[in-house]
Every structure is written in structure tokens, then in C-alpha cells.
Length: 332
Image (tube, rainbow, N blue to C red; front, side, top):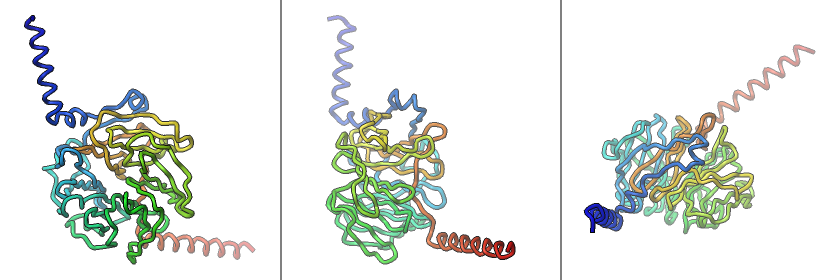
């Protein structure tokens, strides 16, 4: 046997040991853009690495605070840390905000200056102070809730769970109403609040939020978890982050038209739109990646103004109507 052959065999053996001793996740963590993703103009970068994990599940909750900081929660301890909105950071360098117990920093959503968090094992949704981390109960007894989005039409919360289904929660009263009795995971909602999309059984399914009727279905094609809508040049597309380490671009007008734009990642869970710059933050086993859209494109965000803003808007409209009536009288 030649020296070169011996070296190659030793190297192969070392690689195999690393692979079976946990190197799988390390190798898979290196998500890369596909040729299609590159040609479309997407850019992939690492926002935060080294997130506490149990070997499979790591960061889940991601949220943008009213001050523009990014909150990231880890599955293992339920810890939540705050970061500036810049790439290349490590989880240990983030500012601790709170610790809620394993799986309880599970998902975040914001409505104006108000932040909400799902605590899975505690079975509740809380109003979260984004600086101190102090939680105030909004709804309890939910039974393993997973994800949360804000309905931009009324400020209500849609909350999903594989055992919970999808419920509608009025954060003002805490009233919980069953919307759909389906085991759903990651959620996203259209900017006009008319369609709610959920990751259900490896598919992305959309429901009319008024009637509850199903109006979109990709059919099962991958282990879909987090989803987000495109805007601008990406309008008419929905993006799916999967447990198998893929990111898909799906045509809303033709659900069977799917394009794989990134692959090779570790376990992908939730996603969150970074509303300060229109990028998409993607969870992986031990890190959060950033998917930057091509020029002219962006990712949607369903965050809506505080109730007072609606009142001000109404006042403005009434004022304009009064002005027009006055002008009409003068013109007669």
C-alpha cells in the first residue's frame, strides 16, 4: 500500500468518525445558496452563531424590538438575548433579557410598541417587556402553543400548535376562539390580513381569515416550518424554511411551482422578517442566518400600528371629509 493511499484512508476514517460523532450538524449547518438562489440575487449570511442547543433544536424565538434590536431565544434554557442588527455576532455576546425555562422562549411577535411571546411548555402567551423581559399573561391554558402572528386588521393574535390547532386571541380581553382545528406550526399572514398561512403536515396551507375556508395548498413536499411572504419584486411568493435544512420559494398563483433557493442547512425552524431592512432571519440548529433579498425585493411584515394610530388615522380621514364638505359649500 502506498503512503498516499494510507493517508487518504486515515483521512477518510477521521472524517467518518467526526460525521457520526456529531459532525453531521456541523456539516449541515453550512447552508448555501443554490444556483437558482444565486441567480435570483439572494445573499446568505450569519447573523448570530453559537446559540445554545440540545443537538437538534436551538434558536426559535426571534423578534425585532421597537428600538430596532433583535431578540433571539434558545430552546434549551428558554433564555432570551438582545442584539444590535448587525451580522457576525455570537450568542454569548448578546445582552441577557430574561430566562423563562426550557422551550418557553418559543416565538415572538410585535404590534407597534407591544411585544408578545409564546411560552410553549407553560401553555401561554405573554405581553413581553422588550428591555427588562418582564412577562404579563395575555392568555393561559393553551396547551403547547408554537407560533404567533398579529392580525393587522384588528390587532388580534393568531396562535398555532400541533395539539392546539389555530386560535384567535383578543389580547385586550384574553378571549380565545378556535379558528381552525388543524395541527399547525409556523404562521405568516398577508399584509391586508385576509390570508393566514400555516405549516401543516409538510405543506403550506392558506386560509381566508374571515370565512376560515382553505384557499391555498402546496401539498406535502418537505418538512416545512417557518414561512414568510415576499414583497416588491418578490411579491406573489412565499418562502419556507424546513427542518431538512432547505429554503423554498413558492409561487402563490401556482403552488406546485417551487424553487429551492438554499440547501445544506441544519434543522430549520421559525423565520422572522427584520422589518428594519426587509431581510429574513432564518433559524438553524445553533445559529440564525440572514437571507437578504435581491434588489427591489423584500420580505413582508404583518406588524400593525397601535390602536391609537388607527384612531388618529380615523380622525385624519374625518377631518379630510369635513374639509371637502366645506369646500363644496363654498363652491356652490
